[in-house]
Image (spheres, rainbow over the protein chains, first blue to last red):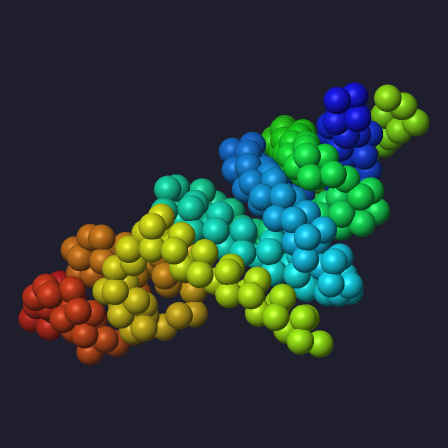
Amino acid sequence: MTNLVSIVIGAIFINNIVLTKFLGLCPFFGVSTKLKNAVSMGGAVTFVMIFSSAITWLVYNEVLLPYGIEYLRIVVFILIIASFVQLSEIVIEGTAPAIQEALGVYLPLITTNCAILGIVLINNISQGYSFVGSLVSGTSTGVGFTLALLLMAGIRERLALADSPECLRGLPLAFISAALLALAFEGFSGMSI
Amino acid sequence: MIMEVLVLGVLGFIASVGLEVASSVLGKEKDPRVEAVLDILPGIDCGVCENPSCAQHAEEIVNDPSVLYEKKCVVISDEDYEEIAEILGIDWPAEAESDEES
């Protein structure tokens, strides 16, 4: 149980997927201009992360390892992730077409979001979590991603109204604030639970 | 060798069947007229019709055919407009009316 709690705290704060591991930066900058889009993007990514964590654990430990073909893991993981991205796109298209238009190309791009491939590789290979551990890790990483996206979107909504030097307006200021955010999250590192 | 092919093939098959089922259960029926109209539109997403893309303009036209009379798309010809009107099943008065206006 304490192990699971430490996975949650670790994935959300100490090893935040975006601000500490620097994975998934493409949607982090692309969709963080509005809070509303950030919420739906975070939701879609979390959905894909939870389900692909579960399925990849089963496939990796029950199929790839016993037959000694774990070198196929990247292809298989991408196949599973891509299926879930497509599924989430079908669901969003059917229920909320406005969100699909707002997210635009970033929705299908979740397929190549390295945060998701990163987290399934971390779950299965570098950490070797159990099934429950993988599920918890996937969920809390999704929450951590959403948290980072929300923080960034809140900052950028304010920055859009601020009187900033013209040469810094837009993406440059976003990069600078992302760096400061990452520095702030560095304060969690070294925390042991 | 055999095992690799089997694993990838079976996984791909499961995924595609799952997606097919999901899209038939949850997916939205696409209006075939939107596709037909989109084929006639230039597809260059120029934005003159005040829509970000031709696809959205096609949807706008199908949802509200009266938009067609405004001739928002400046790229396609009058014959193309007639063709779109035919797809939508509305009259295309055009010639006489637009002469009067101009």
